[in-house]
Image (cartoon, rainbow, N blue to C red; front, side, top):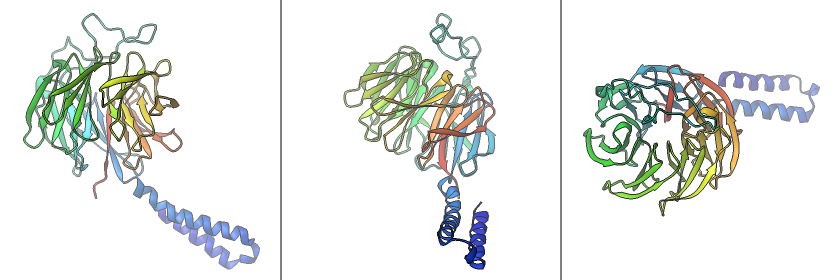
Length: 380
């Protein structure tokens, strides 16, 4: 593209120099400016998009890598059974992926109000009747530069989501089927703490200052806040059922937790560890993942079965609804904050949203049931 732009600029200027008497001066000025701008801006696209997107494919057991510059898949490789939660180390050199040997089953049917219908004593999307392969459970460590699996760290039973500590030294893990949260030291692969929570811990998030982390539990809507240094429980509050994730304003004053079953967004006062506002989302919304923009001005929520991403203000005002693929789940922002990437499991693709226009600009095919996404700088 850069070569074509420079050639165009040269051709325009050459034509003007040969036949200036046939072109009005205003038009000459415009053509020169336009040609120069194209030649100048063309290389910036690749520079601005100097990152890659890693996608966890829950059904295939693979990671797919997408180039940020041309939005095309560039690699696919196996990591283990049922990869879901995915995060990068603070330096962007390592990818961590939660894998699980607990078999998956089809999503439950919905009642007249759009809520999932579970069999008695069965309230998640795991196949409890099938034998779980506990040897498959763990955290996979992937080298970004080589795109190779380095090792698998034992991380208690059925890890699903997790968060990376601010210094990158520890992982805070939700172990869904055992009702505990685990703190894992990634330097020595040792479990340092196990904290009892309640049924189906799912979402995990670290406060911006790194001093606390939160764990949300699906079944009863329990949310726990722990001291990151001591693992001491600091607070326990509840929201409506199936809180799937959590994210924070950059200053750490507020957090945002979705309630999937009721289609709501909960706004949390992090100083008081209390719900200050419950925001109903549009009918049919089943919010999953929450991401806050780098400037803290917008909150993005993937809508699950609604097939949309919702854009809200920090005060909870609905600003926009962006249609995407089927059952959008994981979200990640590009390092420059210009794009939002959305994992659409059933449609097996990743939506790319331009955040300046808040429109989906393309979908990248990603076979295998994309679940989570994370962006890291491209290796030189």
